[in-house]
Amino acid sequence: MGAFSESLFGIIENRISPIAARLSNQRHVTAIKDGFISSMPFLIVGSFMLLFAHPPFSADSQWAIAKWWLGMVARYSEQIMMPYNMTMGIMAVYIAAAISYNLAQSYKMNGFMAACLSLMSFLVVAAPQSHGALPVGSLGGEGIFTAILVALYSTELMHFLQKHHIGIKLPEQVPPKIRQSFDLLIPILAIFLTLFPLSLFIQHQFGMLLPQAIMAIFAPIISASDSLPAILIAVLLCHLLWFAGIHGAVIVGGILQAFWLTNLGINQQALNAGAPITQIFIEPFWQFFIVVGGSGSTMGLVFLYLRSRAPHLRSIGKLGLVPSMFNINEPIIFGSPVVMNPLLFIPFVTAPLVNAIIAWAATRTDLVNHVISLAPWTTPGPIGAAWSTGWDYRAIILVAVLIGVSTLIYYPFFKMYERQLLAQAEAEEKEKQNLQTVESH
Image 1 (tube, rainbow, N blue to C red):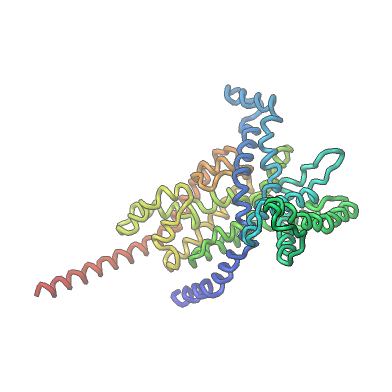
Image 2: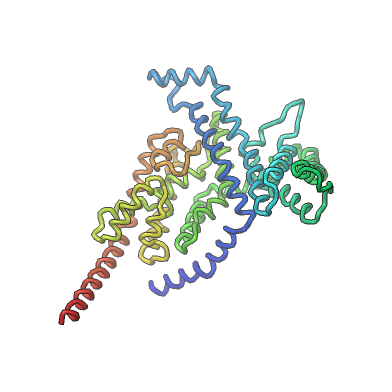
């Protein structure tokens, strides 16, 4: 076991960690991750309004509150759905602008002008005007991958032109704001000479917009990303990185955001259309089912720490209890420590893997509802799980079961670690007493 663990830790530290570190610092990956984070407030508010538009009651319910709620939705459906339509319904618009802004900032360019260029570029290919109106079908979940690609392309194009001083030169006497606006003239022209013809070609050749074509290309990947093997691989990679001291959730979550939001958009469209909801792997599924209490699903470990005979673990449990309730477990991971701790390695990786299997099976068999809404990741697990599944009380029960399962997985390893710490404390105490005896003589 010792040789195996040393070999495994060597692979993680020498092979996986350097690659992950470079990936996490790569400017395009960082821009995409920060762009999604910047868009989250719009998406959370929009998701909440979608839940309000779909009450968790049957149409023939006689409960007074249910009747009032259903009546409100039936009477004011368009007004209630407006916040959703202007947030989640066009989320790719915010994502395109936010990614471009962050990438431009990394190049020390004007982030606002880059965001404007990206927004125009995205609308050109995703919502070309027809009969005096802009079609919005590709501005939601269907347009996410297009938004990413267009944001990166338009910003890199702008960077290339500025780097090679290709643009309209104005005298120094011209105010800076006017010069900045003229700096966009050539990039805008370049967009209409490159992206726009590509969009027209796809429309005439295949009868679809660019986002629809890109979604058709990505369809097999999106389908594969929603499978149990893909979920388990993502969970395993995240926790191997965490174990090496790298924030695995940031790296893996940043990569998965596009798939999570695409799957969420598919589910919400199905909900609005009254069709079956199919997608499972969405961010709340990860946050509230797989990693209850934080990466490693350490909520159960916190409960064990609170009753530990080892003073160090008991103090860590008290320190980490409240943050863990809000899915923040750095005090547990670094205070235990879990990082590079052979005794806690197996449960730290195994607990979220087992949780993923149980939660996936429960969702696939409709024991709990599919995720249809975004809740802030710091929402306490049971509340966040119910919120994101359309206030399904069964999600609360599932979270409790998952915490119990993770507690059982951690228990034998926790006891071994506890005995090790107690033995170390006893040895240190004996050594201290021996020193005192020697000094007294």
